[in-house]
Image 1: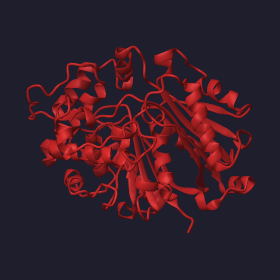
Image 2 (image 1 turned 30 degrees about the horizontal axis):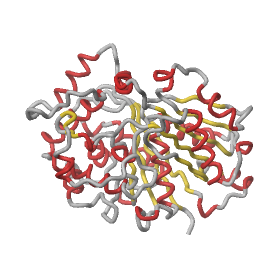
Image 3 (image 1 turned 180 degrees about the vertical axis):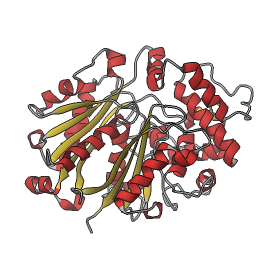
Image 4 (image 1 turned 135 degrees about the horizontal axis):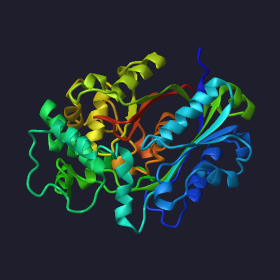
Length: 416
């Protein structure tokens, strides 16, 4: 039997612009809050995993980012592992912490993800994403993606003349594929965005707190068809952290078990070599199947989800890959309100990446923060009633026709 692992503390800064804060300061903020939430100190932690993706590109700080951020906070002497895995960086740090605890090499671990992406150099802010796929095969990458949506002609004026991440083109191609294959409409995509803006209006840590109607989303400035600006995650700064422990670690610290959240599954997977039409072998679908098997659960057991919606199209894709709807029905259930708080399966009650923000190296732990908060019943006005089992999906980069790295986690409230 696998060692049971629990999340005993979480911390998260507000996501958004933090021009007056360094990577170190943002990390300290989230980690201090996680330690306080767990009721422990830095000296109680036996191993740390530090996630960051872009500090090297943006600032030139490479090699020992985790040590530079964490040693001044009191994490001296312990192993500090630096983690980079594109937008799945923070989830990878979380997964490695779970694995280390299950291996028996520690009983309390820290996972932290942090990113500072805002810069006075606007071009640099967007070009950081260019390494998210194989830079040696850019024309081939582009042709492969364009082919997914061949047959959907972008209307005139539906592509921005301003710079944006190459990943918006990637998600636009995926969106056109959904339109062709399942009849997903741009209005259904806009419904996802409007829903997430409504959710984020209740989240004090979200980058965007404004509500938007479907028509306002549709009439917003275009990025690249079918995406408009509010459908896309913003550039963000921020940090998030989690303290994890075994049962022995919890006993050593005297942790309040009523607020501990059990990790039922933590699964990492890399991309699969497949055709664009072979959605049955999508990396996230395969990772989710493994997670459900390990947790002895099914999609019907899930009460809420946080998924990687770098665009609203991403949420529709992951609703399908996680098995939270019948094939081809993700747009329809979103339009019916089933994925809203109060609906059948609330998705991204935090507001998701679109509205909460997307500091890439912190994103996965930001999702964990939200799910732990929900499962504890501490989400206030955005609380999902009766939340007991939650699923998290976080992807990073692109290889072939899908995410290069994927994490799927399942968390459970175990206290009565």
